[in-house]
Length: 443
Image 1: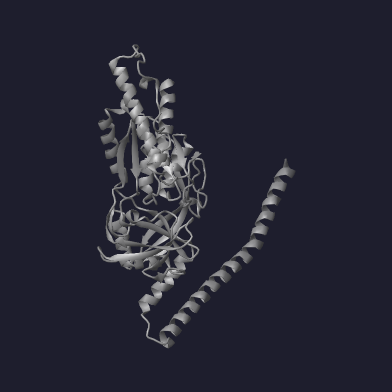
Image 2 (image 1 turned 120 degrees about the horizontal axis):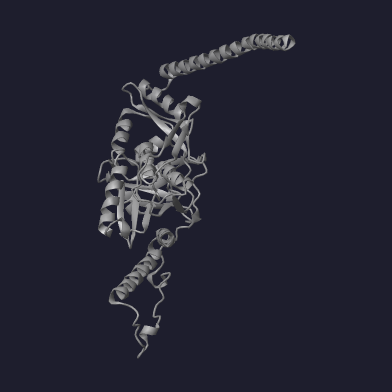
């Protein structure tokens, strides 16, 4: 036993000696790193003074410093940026759901401005701007190599004024121009409508109105349908939704989950991690859910789709989402605007990071451009049935109510078939919802 104790003490002493030997080099490395940082700051100061003193024209010192800050932040990733006071104020207005502009969410890719998605019923959407479009010119001025904030400023202007943007679109041979009239953008974050016995919840953005709109619209449509017993399920349409506020994505996810993790965020340090769980209560009362996504579904949209998918609460239909799996924190800068800094990555309940990967749908359904009326899928023209034959005997096994129900079901099916021509993805989602409702009722 004494030998064991001695061995243990000896091991501790060796450990102490090794620690003492390692501490010296670590301190030296940290000192060298600090010295190097101060040398770089001295270099920055030196360059700043030389520009101010010897540049061919007198410079605006505040503008120069802001440009340096902007460059430092934009070098990190596409979503970190400096917000001058006027941009910071505009951003705060935008999250409240009303602002002036074109109505598009943009990012930067390969030196060009790329449309993440147009916002529903805005000038850009009505003019035909699509998710994935590259904006190569604004009023004839090239955006190649232009900072994202500068490009956004170029697209801003007085309400009612005209702007011409040049678009490069995949599948189109030549660039083309789109003329847009700037307007006040009023975003109703959630709209709802009835499609047969299904409720379609269209969520266009995650502003501070989103969850309140969702709850109000959902309850209104359920009441219009005649109660939850008459509803076969819900479609949550997140297509071309560029995201927004994290807390709203959490509230929307929680609206359809009874328990379990919704999302986790992990920063550089373990202490910066957070995990958010659902609370009891499901607005849909357990009815089947289908979530629609596409390449314009980003950030907060992906949190909702990922959470409902991982909990097997919804079937996700459409195409792969955008793949923005990072969290930005807005940090005010003592009365001089703010900085938007990427501070964490978020993960779905199963531990997936969707950064650069996106959420993959359970069922891949590509969007098909509308076809001509004569080629509608599912509607066969001039088809004859037994009932059309002269002298055919009637069906005496059905009551009048049953005949009416069959007629209503046939009309609903024909309506869905017509919808396939206008919006094939939504039509598929509604078909899927009908099938899930049938299976649930059978059980």
